[in-house]
Length: 282
Image (cartoon, rainbow, N blue to C red; front, side):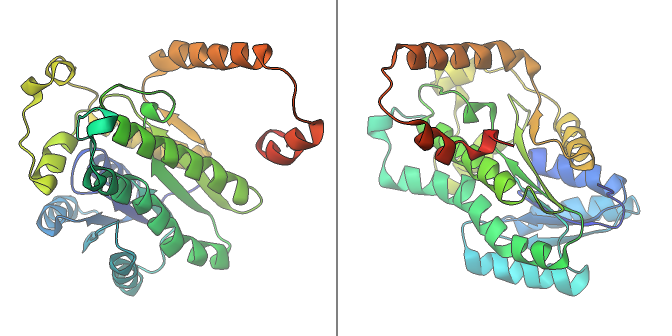
């Protein structure tokens, strides 16, 4: 897919991976929309891009609110026209509690942003993409934790499993169209997600209070991830990984599943498999 002159909306675009994706797209000639709940931070990113003679605007966007999405879409269409590239990237981090200690508020906060934000973006932008029948692309930000769990991060893990399922379903539903779909599954990236999450929830940010967080590596430069996302949009790649080293763990997980399947008695019928496994029948 060609990037030049495409209108690209990036949620969570004011920092971290979102800012990197927006910058990478702008450098390749896209008209970029930096969408973020922090309007001032989004304005700062846009000023930086415009000062480098790139085309960009900012919109205030709470991805958990369908009303906010509609207002943002209207502004973008008024200035740049309809969105061609949608990057559902906005995300928040874990409350860092065991599952039985997570409150309703904890679950709602994480799922409203990480999962519902993706759904709201699809519902707001996809209909126009379908109608125009031109080359478009949707990127949803999951995680390597879309594939396996991490203790003490169940709220985040569950939300990222949801993003993977949404993305795979979307790719199936759009397989006979000109709309591409990708799911970004990064490992550790050097972003302020933990600090931003703490600021929005009012929880104190103290990585030293958690043994795992205290030993957490710095992570990748977000700019590298941004470039990988743009490359995937151009080539139509579905999975975008940042750490191929995780491959051995994903293989091990698949082996555990395969071993369990082999031990399982055959209770269903072939019709059942044929009905549900459409993703692997093409």
